[in-house]
Length: 253
Image 1 (cartoon, helix red, strand yellow):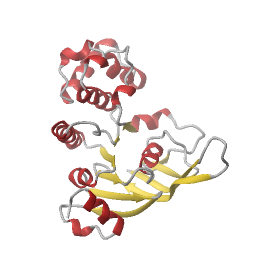
Image 2 (cartoon, one colour):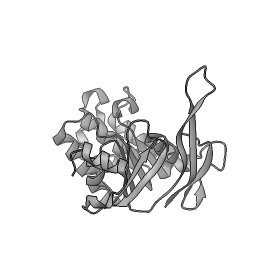
Image 3 (spheres, one colour):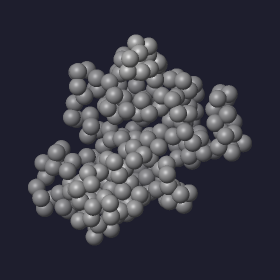
Image 4 (cartoon, one colour):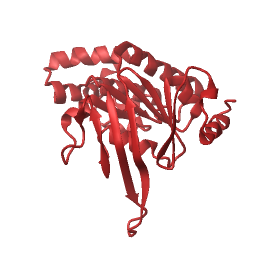
């Protein structure tokens, strides 16, 4: 379980400015094992900053995050063990892949780093992960530039799954795909979550996606969590005015 405890984070308004703006303000929330969540809000609502703090990539100004009861920010630097527990996949998968590293080597890298597997075991595990993520094993020796956007995304997912994470966060990870591919990627991601059982968190501005993938939807606005609902198909559970605006803008009435 991941517990977010009164988490706050702010940033400077400019290089020469002493003024700051709040990205996340005293936010508390829990993500239970095996749950599927969506954090939805407009650009600037704080959802990506929250995701980066949960992933250990952005140090908070105050508050903390507990993973299975252990604080993430007890030390000045986030420990290596946390990056094994929580993995974040961003919108631009191509940028996250070394252009000179083959698909196989990209997926095998965390296997060597975290598990110190020998070459044969890494290859076997890599091929298993590729099959799990619907990547043909013959792509093992291909470079990222030889793959489509969807295939690059699958490589990023396979690499993230290599460390056997407790939580996988997708930050606008299906943006830029056409509708059929987007739907296929979402279905593949949710199928993986059902098979493996990790906590799944989608970060999105799209309420239609949020209600499609999540058991619980968290709505953020201006650094605050304004509503959290368990969703099972009835949109009347959303009572906050801003949530209703997001529903309407996505064509959900």
